[in-house]
Image 1 (cartoon, rainbow, N blue to C red):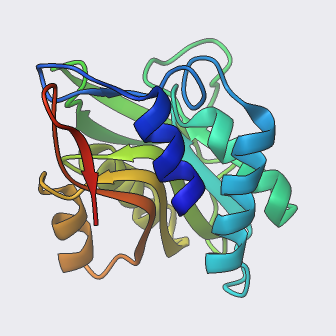
Image 2 (cartoon, rainbow, N blue to C red; image 1 turned 180 degrees about the vertical axis):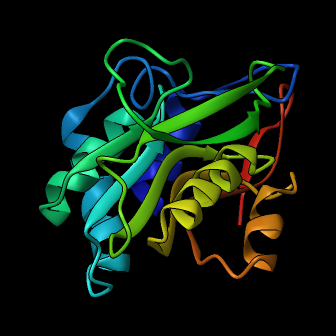
Amino acid sequence: MQRLEERIRREGKVKADGVLKVDSFLNHQMDMAFLGELAQEFYRLFGDCGVTKILTIEASGIGIACMTAQAFGVPALFAKKTKTKNIAGEVYTSQVASFTHGVSYDIMVSKEFLRPGDRVLMIDDFLANGNALLGLAELVKNAGAGLIGAGIVIEKTFQPGGEKLRRQGIRVESLARIRSMSVERGVEFY
């Protein structure tokens, strides 16, 4: 998606530790009109798949997941990283190792909101190592729901996540695919 690539070139900041910061428009401060455009692109890609639920993981994917859910006219659901009083009753859980934060944690979704018969589209802002999405896919499987695929805003193709997901038969559609990035050269796309 050319407008996304242009925005990444203009506002993205490559950090020395392999992190691309796009927090001025995507996952800290959110440009809602632009997220709406991205959501419409996900709808174009997956709109004929009978999606009944959008699933993401807290926290940085919530904005784009909500906009995508609005485009589809279905609920957005996010996996929580900590059990709170708000999550009562039985939950599906999975363990996820975070690339960005360098820690492992359990994610959970209430069984009340993820059910057999749901047709789930996972949405996330980044795909790097794929651990978050593999954890979400495990929740979907444990619920007996159908996994439609994964809509990713930015995929770092030089990291193994996309390949891992695709090898497991998961349809992955990324709006921007980064070939390489460095502080010196910036971001190179396919």
